[in-house]
Length: 233
Image 1 (tube, rainbow, N blue to C red):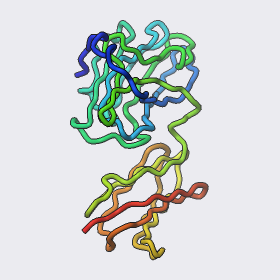
Image 2: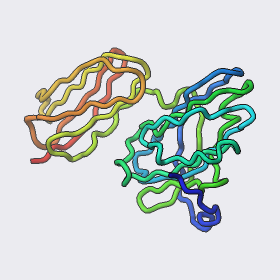
Image 3: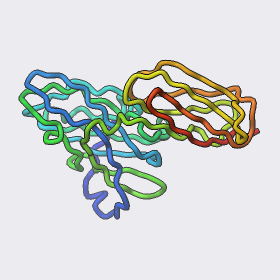
């Protein structure tokens, strides 16, 4: 569970950067239920903790849906005070992938409300900190027009790899996707295709009859992106 830490414990640490959690802006009417997904564009994070404050007079937190973070990563005892505490580190599951869904909040509006005016990340109960490459970062919440739903192709994990690797990507809309893997000479090693929904998706790749540097290209009807990966003996 997320343990409430004394804010003073972190005040003497110099924060060298910020983990920006991205969420889509929305205006809710009274009685409306809405699912708000928080994502991270930063893949170097190995852990985080913070208090998510919400205006309890205008919003009710109905449910927290697991993403990378599971139920055990949240403290729910302070919901009546408008606070959700959370703490996660990669040893509990696996490392964070760029653009990945951390968790989703199911919210119900008690009154007309704009989410960016009713939600914020603070150190009220659990200090707002993220940990990356031996550094302590701050944590911020950024609202935008569906920032998390742009087309993106992420670095395969693990990389370099042997046997099997996973390629993550993000789609702004449901699409037919073709993944083409080639060697440095341009020879096609493998082609995978399928229909995928909006948001973060993954393709597991294995049985590649190749070694060394490979390129993988993800293509939809409207977008194309290419990255490099390395397969070892």
